[in-house]
Image (cartoon, rainbow, N blue to C red):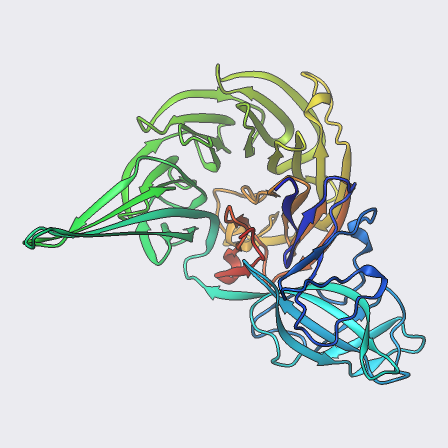
Amino acid sequence: MSNGIAPASWNHYVWVPTSCLYPVPPIQFVNSIPGISNEFGVLGYTTENLAYIDWQCGQDLTSIPGIDSRFAIVGSVPASITLSGQQPFSTQYGLPIMYAFTGTGGAPKLAATITASSVNSGGATATFPLGNSLAQGGYFFVTENANSTGGHDFNSWNLYSIAGTQTIAGNPFGVSVGAQNIGFLEANSCVRPPVKTTSSNSITFPVVSLYSSNQVKAGGSAIGVGANPTAVAVYQASSVTINSGSGCDLIRNTYSGTTRAIVTNSGENTATILDIVNNSVITTVTVGTQPVAVVTAADGSAAYVANYKDSTVSRIDLKTDTVTATVAVGGSPTSVALTSAGILWVGGAGFLTEINTSTMAVTGTESVASKTIIALGYSDSLSELFATSVDASNNVIADEISPSTFSAGGSYSPIASHTISTLGTYTRQPSGQVVRAFTSTLANNTSISSILAGAPPLVVQDGWAVVTATPTGFTITDATGHVVLVSETTPSPVTAIAVDAKLNVAYLTMPDSNTMLTVPLPGTN
């Protein structure tokens, strides 16, 4: 199809018609759902009772009606939520009704019908009790006013997400998402004719570094790595075949896709290469001092590691698992981002550097006055670089940067900046020194004494939505309109965010609370 698909928030996704300036959530329903009208041409029907998609153009995403909370965690879902309408709520013929739809990977399904408990004077907002009516998932809310015929008329749409919480001991710090295709073969050679059965399956799973327990958890298996692992990235490598069975029977599983991972061990100046099919260590590579961030090439050919303490970037050839280049950059690099054209961006204390990965030569550095860049991400579709930075006043800022204006020896000039949080302070033990950091996990460790490294913004699908970790939660920025759409809190600081390629699940790691949030997304199929 010609129209792209991209998530606009943690709990919905957007079909973008090519004629629209901004992506706008569709209205999508089935004919058999009761009480849905076709008022204003917003809602549509098909004669076959199939899902119908209607387009709305000319609206900015900032027109999403207000809601007092767009995010909750299972076990901590609020007793009620208060919504604004696209038109006034009315009690003239009865209390408004809210339909909660969920439709991950398919047509929407009606999850709950909830009657409002109250409408404020003038009808600007309505409050709907949640109780235990909604489980973990992403929801599309539709509200309607009762009418004189006993039915209901469309009022507004809204969005909500409920995440699951998983406790993981060992301070889960970095996260990536493995995606594997599994081919299954079972053969019996002792019968005539021989019998052969084949099938295939696809799986996705989080790969998480555990900072204090010196492990990486791939799915449900823990693998021992080096000291204080921080960033982790999966990558494509050769397929892995596992044979089993005996006698006449042969069972063969062949795994392809992201069969390997690399993790930076900040406490011992190494990177560990992992087989995430057999859950084993392949080798350990010595890099620079205190590696804290890593990015891999899309074809799995190379990894680029930012070494915080000695201000270098190491290139690792992932075919030979050896360091093939070391490049000096500015002070204390914390983050790396790679474009499809092979341009590596490196950020840190007071600098932004561009590196040509074909030659591993620095092509330019800009001065970032009074700021430290702590995270980088890149959108190929928008040709735009995204940075999370901290200024001298401890403000956490989401910056949008056009590489076309980057100038060697010039000054850092974002095309848009948004203050999204403030930086936390923690007392490092046993010295009692107060330091700036996102997490007490890092502040209490003498190796990283001033600031968090490795909390990357995430450029989702076509690049217009950017998810950024903050000391207090996360934000979602519309990079096309240069506005912050969503700012949410979490139980403790988020140090990494990852989403699977089909946008079905988002993972957020929080080392201070030994927690990983799992947020279902509508997905692309």
